[in-house]
Length: 271
Image (cartoon, rainbow, N blue to C red; front, side, top):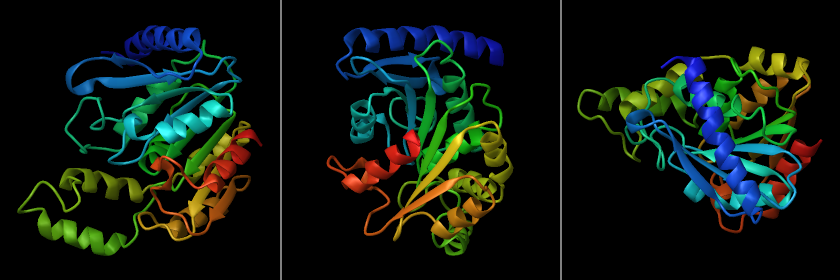
């Protein structure tokens, strides 16, 4: 299937999904599937009574839209029409569970959805957590639609203890396809290739076009390297960084998250 065909199909599917959400106007989650089998993407939309714009929310690794309802609720309460998807290998989307050959596959999924929102209420913003934030960074390379703001929450640039984890994965690779915790060896290889990349040029290009870029970190994040993020922020002048102490990497999926988290995200989102 050509990329244009993917976009045409996605536009029709997402237009129907958004119309359903807007007609309800009560924040309930409409749901559909784009494609089939291993390439199927589970898509969701929810709308307040009068949307102020459209926000795409992208969940983290081992999460799904099903576990992201607190994030969707926070965006709805701020007035956004929310469009979300289960990343490949997650939730109700197709693909081997928690597996990927290249992180660009996550980025392609986000880009196809984002580029299909031409008729959705504007402005358009992106919010992602952990792997979802990495997926957004990957998608920005070729995304056609321009977003007003992008907020990256605890983005997965490098995991903590990257060297030790890489060493352990290399030892395990001849004997197993799955690492402790559930990640596949193939996914970890894809992660390492992603971690060697440099998203700074992509961010600087987006900033130059007028997109507001913000980062939100937990001061004691247990999963991702804050040092890698702060280094990236220094190389992307114009981006903004908020660091919150005493908060877990997975705070975003708590049913009642620390109110500081969404206060910080919305402050960056709304400028």
